[in-house]
Image (tube, rainbow, N blue to C red):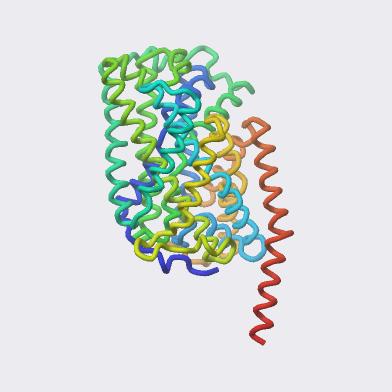
Length: 452
């Protein structure tokens, strides 16, 4: 496999890498999923779903940290799956990752843009067509902002994180004066009855919280552009997970202490409603504007990270060569970025938000999250003497427990999405063995003939 970092500049510091991770993680997700999470758990016990999401992020983050420190190259999972499995199976898994990314990454872009346009309706009345116009325009704007050198992007990311973190601190701090413990910690008698209905609710709520935590691994996609990556990649992963977990838990507790859970579950603009209830409509509008900046920031980080995966595959010869092109002056994979922006623009016009959120996660669980966790176990068993710049604590427990939780979330998802994800994987496997592998064998044979 070719080293895919040679044409990329290692210009991102630990602070900048952590900022990119955290603005990716937050976005519009927690603000639109919080009512869904409360509704799924039917009360303040929904805090369990946020804790389960944080636990899974830490467990899975241990896998990403170990692999990212060992192979700090552009593409993240694309590289990791090839390295840990090796040979034919590793190549197939890495192809499936790229195959899924072509569909899933633009869906992530679309979810951020659709969420932005939906939340904007708190400030401006927009019909369905106008919301689509806004979401599409936002994707174009963010693509333009990303069309620059990685050092400039690092500086922008820190500024966006200051806005994001400051908004959360304002939200949490505002709740202390009006906090009602009876709302925040008043559980019904059957709140923790371990019935099948409880676990279905927990699974569906956790799917939403995990969606809100996604992005802790973005630094791995940018592995070829991180300074001192063996240390800074694991640090950025755990700093971002810890920081965001504290902010999410604080947000959930404070909002639960400001209004009854049924009011929270029925609100389409929960954070705006929260600020309006604590202050006045004008302050709520300011808070809404800040949330929209946060949503744009997440889209910024998402497109940045995902644009490196097709680039890495193209450099490695597993994707169209045009995606390996790097901007001659600004030093970033501009073709891959423009592709992500273009497909994300189209998806933002076609899909609904709730469909996108569920599809994103169920599609990625098997190949990327479970695939990597099983892969790191296999790598330790197969090559125990390999150098590991970072080794996960309490190995192998984080990987094993992470696999169990991922599968729990997968099998408590609606069956239509499980079937859809399975079908996408099956189509990818067929394409690989029918088209990709024979083409590679043909190219290899031709290369040998020319040498002889």
